[in-house]
Length: 224
Image (cartoon, rainbow, N blue to C red):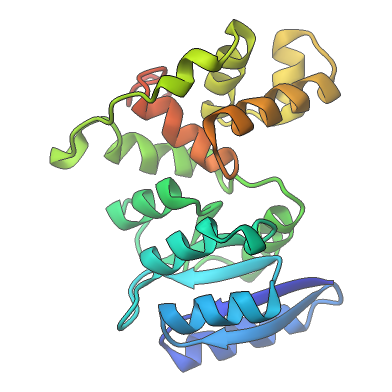
C-alpha cells in the first residue's frame, strides 16, 4: 500500500482527495493536516510514502513544512508533492529547491493525481518533466530579480560522465532514455544518477534539475 498524508487548509479539498485516493486498491490516506506544523507532525507519526502539500497554509506554510520533512533523516523515504493553483509560481520553485519531488496543479485530472502519487512513491521523482523544467527555468539563475546561486564546490566532485548525466536529468530524461542517449545499460545510468545525487546531496531528481540550472550547466531557454 502507498501511504499518503494530505496537507491543505481547505477541508473540502482534503475530503475530495481522500475519497479519490482511498478508492484505489493500492493507496491509503493515513493522515490529514490543515497547516504546515500539523503536516510535519503527521509525517513524523505515520512516515508516509507521499505527502501532498499545499503551499499556502496558515501558520507554518507548506514551504517550511517541506523543508522540515526533507531535512528529517527519519523521513528520508517520504516524498513531498506540492499542490499549487498556478504552474509558474516562485513558491513552487523554492519548494523544489528545498526537497519537494515535484508538483501538481490542484485542478489536475483525477487520473493524473493518482498517477503522480504512484510515480513519486515508486521513486520516479520528477513529475511532468517539461512543466517542472519550465518552472525552474523561469525562476532559476536570476529570473524575477533572483540572484543566481554560486555553484557549490561539490560540482568539482563530479566526473565528466556524471556532469553529462546531470544535464540529461535536467532535460527531463528517464534512466532508460539516458541509457539510450549514452549507449550504456539502464542499470549503469541509474548508478550514475544515484552517485550524482549522493555527491550533490540531492534528495531526488527534481533537486538535480534545480542544481543544473543554478550551476549554469543549463540555462533558461536552452530547452525549448
